[in-house]
Image (cartoon, rainbow over all chains, first blue to last red; front, side):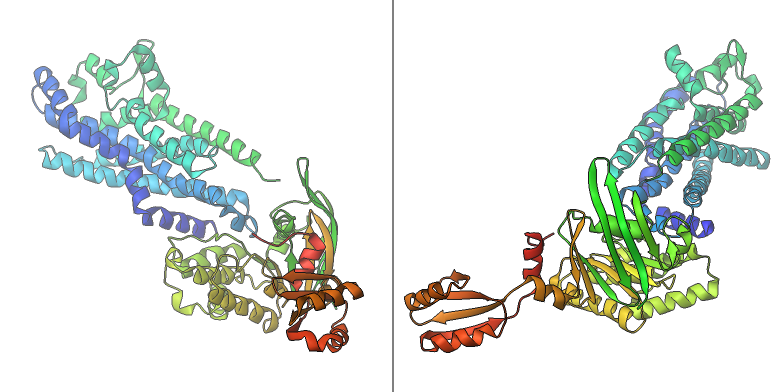
Length: 282
Length: 304
């Protein structure tokens, strides 16, 4: 039953070409900005400092960010189905059928996670292709596994956040507005449009609180390490580019990042479940 | 006679607004039951309560022998509902839609496949099975909606305004499908409509207004009770006819040169015609319609 609903949700998502496009819009914008001018600027800047491989290094930097953004924008697109079912009153057909509300809600969540994972993996493939064509090399097998694991973790956290936001949304208009706000903000909140080091300290704190930025950090660590051994990258650059977060003078450990992603996911899911179950119709 | 739906003293309010104010009615098994009423009368609220979509405030409802509120899922498995607005997915094919929705009823794969084939057949849309729902015409969509409602082989089929918004020809063919389900498949059909010619074909009609039942009965009973037969006369000499009408104190309406005289019984017309036959250019006698009955009962014309 849930399986059939998931199948339905996935078909609805992937057959709606415009919604697939729009859930990747944030990603296209970032890549566009990077290819057109941000990239040149940043590579030029890094050239002076590191010299070798700076192009590969910075392309990996941006692609790591792109992948972490994809996990949230595509989950957002997938939750559009839940909003549509509510807004277009399709929900009534489910309510008069012998299925439980939690089964329906679970199907939305699982579909969103599957969509997020598929689309982010696809983005990874395209990113690697771009890096390869651009003169870099493809991820090693162990790095690839790590990246895939991070995608899963990131999808878990993002889908929870989006689920929470979407549980408040009742109309397609509101969904459109929320999506464009998320799509725009996300580039800043993950420190991709502008390296975190260029931002005022208040905004930096905000970014560090935002769970998805932690998956950005971990992805950068893995992907950029392919271009150069990050041990030799001065700490100030790690902080500047968001390859590590400094909290109270210490770098956060990998475990801390992972724990934060997991914890935020669990908290958002719990909150969303509270909201959804309070909405039961009378 | 067997009651398949029994409603006693049903109440429902939304905040201060009383949508349904204690209504009683029952539906006989395998009958075609029409729920008639102007907008905002409480039709949809009632149908939503009967189909477990809304919870009632007060009253007793029994559907197919099960008390409402005791085992909703058992009721849900014995009813089918066609909503006024489509609830299927435009991006899925007819078959995919039916497979998804059919999976809610915990049927084996073989049984579900059989049900889908039957539903497609009964509604006459086998050749549309692989077409996307979104690409269908209004009538085809409505047939698919009905096919979806048939998946659990329901005892009772609820239809909320099933023919609204369809062109006359399509309306007729959808209506034939509904009649077929009731006559051949022995299904109990409960529908709301605002087309009088449809209500006229029902076995039993309940008219609801302002959340209260204002009349109920068979269409012929309602027509007898609440509408008049009319004698329409086009006279040769109008003044002469008016003198006659005034003398006999007949209730009438005048439309340019045609006089419509309200009759208690059709037979009265024979007397009148006999007495003034020299002054008649043409005449006709019309039976009262359900439309007239409806207007007389609610004081409103039915209109969406």
